[in-house]
Length: 80
Image 1 (spheres, one colour):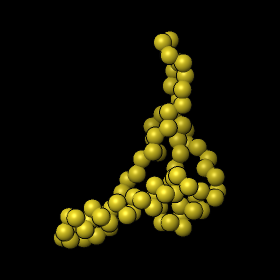
Image 2 (cartoon, rainbow, N blue to C red):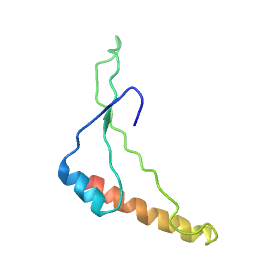
Image 3 (cartoon, rainbow, N blue to C red):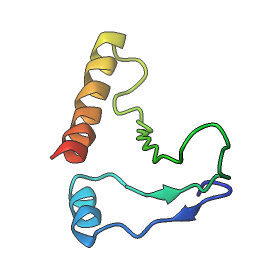
C-alpha cells in the first residue's frame, strides 16, 4: 500500500491474467492540491519490483538476462 493514496479497483480480467503469469498488479490514485501556475493533469507511473530468479552464485550476465526475461513478461502484459 502507498501512503496518502486510495487503491483502485482493477479489471478482473487484468488481475486474472497477472495471476496466470505469476505476478501481482495493483493500482493507486494519489490526490494532490490544485496548483496556481499550471492546469491539473494525470500522471501515470509504472513500477516493477523484480526478484532474484537464479542463485546469486550464477554468472552475473546469466542473472541479468533472466531478470530481463522476467520483466519483459510484465512489460508485454502492460502494453497488450
